[in-house]
Amino acid sequence: MRKVYLLIAAVIAVASCAYAAEQSPIILDLSKSTTELTFNDENGSWTGTYDDDAESIESQCFSFLHSAISEWKTWWGFTASNSADDAQPANTIEHQWSNMAEGGILLNEDGTVKLNDFGAPEVSAEMPYLVAFYSPYMSARPVDVVFNDGKLYDPQSVYINLNSYTFYSVLLGDGYARAFTNNDLLTVTIHGVAADETEKTVDVAIASCSNGDLTTARGWKYVDLTPLGTVNELYFTITTTDTGDYGANTPQYFCLDKLCVTPAEGSATGILAADQTGITYDRASKMVSVSNADFTAVYDSLGAKVFQSDDKSFSLASLPAGVYVVKAGNYSIKIAR
Image 1 (cartoon, rainbow, N blue to C red):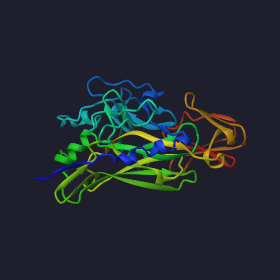
Image 2: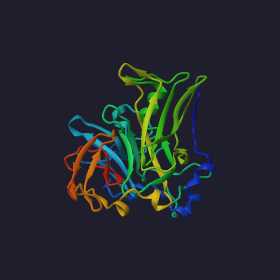
Image 3: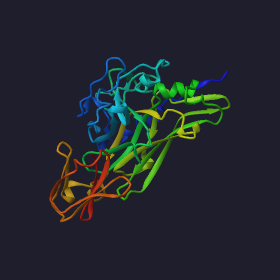
């Protein structure tokens, strides 16, 4: 009989963001979200999940990109949830919203992560968290995070968790995926994109099987992000050893909470946007304004030019939702539209 091991956060690692207090760390707290977050009473899912017009979840300096096709009941990227249901799902689709830790992570009054006597983060169904669905057929970077203030940041840490759908698929198999056996591995890769578009990555094994024993990130797993360096974008990919003719068989979901970043030091490397370049973007009106250049070009996430203008102000409303780079003169900013 195989054993299932749970990964828990190491106490010594949990406090790393607090050590950078002099750099004013920003820890994701969805109770501060400027996107209205209301939840389905039955399954805990964000009521905006299938809203075609809901392009992101905004909280503090973070823009977590979200996309949906309501007609197909399809979404990808990030959504939010307050489900604490970790039971084996009878209907797997209804359990794409839940996580195995039974809630989001609580914070202390000073904004740091609240730990229990064992050094693991305390959770509550009252605290919302993020659920991510990686759908590589829909976008080049379907699970994407950018910073809505146009600044560069140094990622410090994040917590990752399995959701119920993926956990029970890995444990027991389902109609599409098999239960994990020896040498099977499910990995979330976190990509940090620098201002010059170079990347560094951190790999997180959230399920693995060795010698007949399955190890999973059933609780919130602490991840050190400092190897990513200074970034202006984060995106996530998932790989699994259970694949078929049409790609991954394992459900490509994970949960995320308490992403922690600190502003990059020095204005020369710490600010991409408005203060120096005169480039500003108003998300409500989808208008770009430029004051210090005579020509502006807009590029998609693959580097293709999708728009250009000689005007000092223009709209990006005609572009589909996604991440874009706006370049004017020698400067640029990255935005989520």
